Image (cartoon, rainbow, N blue to C red; front, side, top):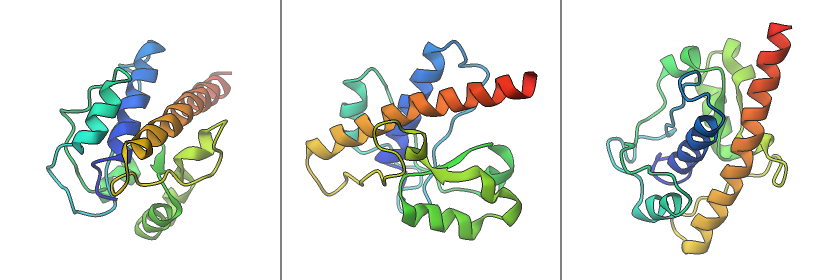
Length: 153
C-alpha cells in the first residue's frame, strides 16, 4: 500500500536472489505502493533491520506510488494482498491484466495467500513477511527462467 514495509522487503529479497543467480544486470526490479502515503520515505526501520539481518540493505529505497507507465515497463506486477491486487487491476488497462498477480502465487510454502501487513504488529510480523517474500522470490525467479527458456526454445 504505502511501499515502506512489505514491498521494499520483497524488492530486497528478490534483488539478492537475482544477484545470487548471476542475473543482476538482466532483470529490472522495483517496488511501489498503490497509495501515496509514504512517497519519498525510507522503508520502515523495522523492515530495514529485518531485511539487513538476512543480508538485504533496503535503506536506500524510497517509497513511490505505482505509475501508469509501470504497467508498460514491467512484465510482472505483483501485489502483496488481494486488496492491492484489486487496486492494481482497476488501475491497469485490460491489456496488462495478465501481468498482475499475487506475489505469493510464486510461493511453494504459502501459495496464493496474502502477505500480512506487519506495520501495526510486532517483530514477529516482519520476520513472517520476510519468510514469505523470500520463498516467493525463489519461485518467481524460477518462473522467469522457465519462461525465458521456453521462449528461447
